[in-house]
Length: 432
Image (cartoon, rainbow, N blue to C red; front, side, top):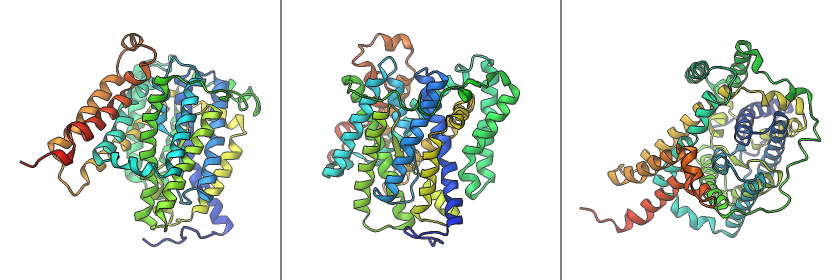
């Protein structure tokens, strides 16, 4: 595929800013949405949630800048990881210091595996069945959180009204995707976030929380909540290590997606550096007390739409994110997104997560057989059941086991690995 600008081409200043702003607009929605979800899960006060999103913006901006110049050096946008969100949700009841210590350690382990070359040996476990299961499980195990955002989180509006609003907004998102192209399609989530929030506040103005805009400063929520001492809880750490297993799959797939599109040289080195920098970024995120970032796989569509494969177009986006991280007023606006809008957009995003998993499962040279269906199907069923366990069941588990046994994602991934590599290993199965 031919592009107007290649990987290392430097653009005229005006085009650089225009394309950089498009990448910036693409990254904002996921940061705002995941920041809002974490704030809901951890029951953060509005001002604390503003500080949390500020720190997320700061970490993402620095990580993006470093990846473009010294990491994988590819035109890949990054943002907060949804799979780490599962780890945070399953660790409710534990101190924030324990949760973010696990993210810090998980990032350090990922960095060490990449730098040492041991990560390559782990790739043998990334079979299509396991990868497909991981991708689908991420979506399904977040379903209870999405349900809570839509029906429970906003008590000032009847759940049936919120549910109706959510169905209409979700369908509108898919209609917009169907009839838009290029940059408009790539930024449909941004417009849904803005338009959906504006419509919701017009319908229910009492839901707007003005205090997030006029209190606090760039100094007081931002420079607080750091992980100053490691607090290790084995169950929480094991849960996050499974999440980092999935994060590495996501990161690897995102980097490899560039190979077919622009065929960059020395891909092996780019993968090692890219995953290592992702690990370092998660160490920094853990220290700041926020969810860690990962490279996103949606970049090829943006590159094809804009006709520019230059990695330098993401530098203005990283700088804009950096500047925004020190603006509590604008971040306060982001924190005011109604939960029902967040839940609706998550449904849209996670639908593509399921679609990606199905593509991985079925787009292979080898036919999809019953054995493959069992390897994918049983873990998804188990993970979904565990994700919907009532609180009374989870509270009966020992605290050390709760983040593992009560985490549908961990249960699903673990069962997929056992089925794929222990119970139904291909090298030992005989053909009839």
